[in-house]
Length: 115
Image (cartoon, rainbow, N blue to C red; front, side, top):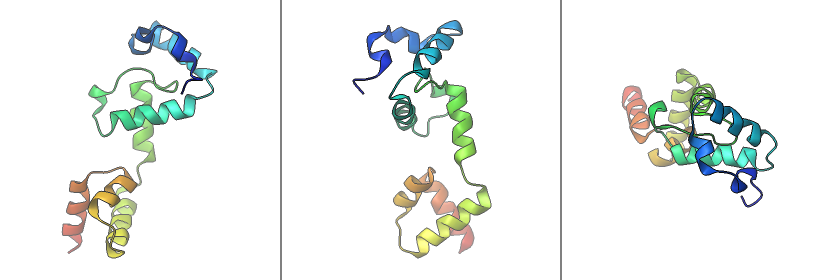
């Protein structure tokens, strides 16, 4: 991500408060690697709760990334059906969890309820 606009700015700007975050988001708006940066931020944060997410990644703040994660998750019934279909095909719980953005424990619970 050498082309990133933020590479030449003060790193503290990306983890500031209020107006600093607004300025950081404006800088991100014109960045050629914005989508890759947002994805990197999501991967870096993993399944961390909202309280452990911080900073601006790809023009999004922690609140926006949390909302997008929730919107991207399938509805529970659909998710459970996907889990069971994948398990029937022999896909491992870890692989199912990674594909659906859930935990191994969720996969196990769904499989136990269905049994």
